[in-house]
Image (cartoon, rainbow over the protein chains, first blue to last red):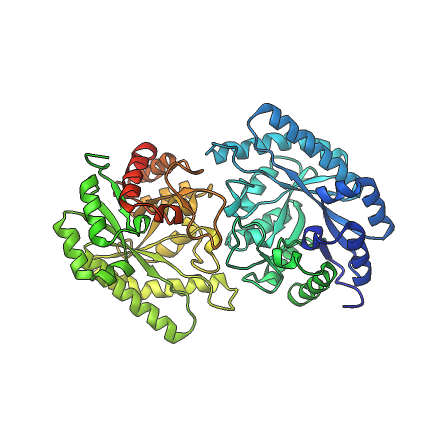
Length: 278
Length: 278
């Protein structure tokens, strides 16, 4: 791989989590990648301010920070902790210079079977966090996760549900993350992307392919672009028809990719992006 | 366990697949279970006519036959084979005395990324199979499967999609199967159950609970009633409000349950049904 990666390509840090932050920056510069989506834990370990300076000085754009959320707790103390942690996540996003904090909403509290109630508690939390984020130039980007995560990670399973939540708040406070891995099966998702675009609520667009068999726990089986069942170019078309012209992040959680050389995986990912989505 | 199981309780054969057909019948009689949903493969191995006679002579009602379907092939020869096999499944259902053949529609053909096309091929197949089934007193019951099966088992992922397909045909030919495991995450499912009921299209109602972590391949992790995240009584309420008064099948695919004594699992399942759904 030489020359420049496609301009809108952004590498989500999780795709190549075997790379340290300086290694990630170096590989991006060598491969002509101009954008990266970051995760809180590795950034915190490295130092938020130091990481922000490194990306800024390297001319790299931070496209998103992953992730806030986990806002479904019933217990008041647990709930207060979650809100405080989300305010810190907003602060970190602002320091890193990204306007998008991706939210994974959280699953059912232990012993609860009340999806509707959990979704309402997310709305309550957005009401508290939205103004705080907007004051700092950050938008909360609700990410619907695949329904297979509904009980333990995210009770928001469709783009329609995410928009039903987001639209209760101003678009400068709350939007959505569109990730092909989570919504590709949903025949209503194209019309919901149009709805999101019309409302100015598409904060982030992420790509991953769908491959089977799913691994135990179903977390780390996201396919490299082109290896699976998703027509990525079709979904890019829906998002572009909805007037989204921002970065396109590739976010893969994949044990096989993590076991390989990170720079090589990044180069491969740039190539797959060019082939399947550019 | 003694006395009679709840009248509407039906045991799907797969829940206790460690039992042979005579063992299943014996356990049902001992535990006062009056209904069973059967699977083609074990019934074929035992002999369809002999099995039919055994259930009939024992006074047991066969509530469904699982399963037809796998109707998404593009290749004409493969397609003709699938249609022929589905006609045989209809014949077997008629012999067993059940009016319901559950359909698992099939996934994407190898190399295809066209969910919409696959769903259209299912509609074409229903057009051929529906009249054949109705002439034999059998209804084709499209079962939406959880979206995590969209690529490899069933491109019909929601009750709304299943009804969009079913409603192209007369209700005496094509209906739907409502299974809590597959639709519990879907906030639109309650209104779709009402739609199905209004159209007289609820052919079968099945229960399984949702437990995590999901096992590799995500096939055999269905939870025993009460062990998971689904409010089973709430879903039973939706189906009853839609005027469904038929049998309620418990269908669990679960390695842990399969490793135990089958009669004991059946007794436990009757007890859980009484506790969580009766």
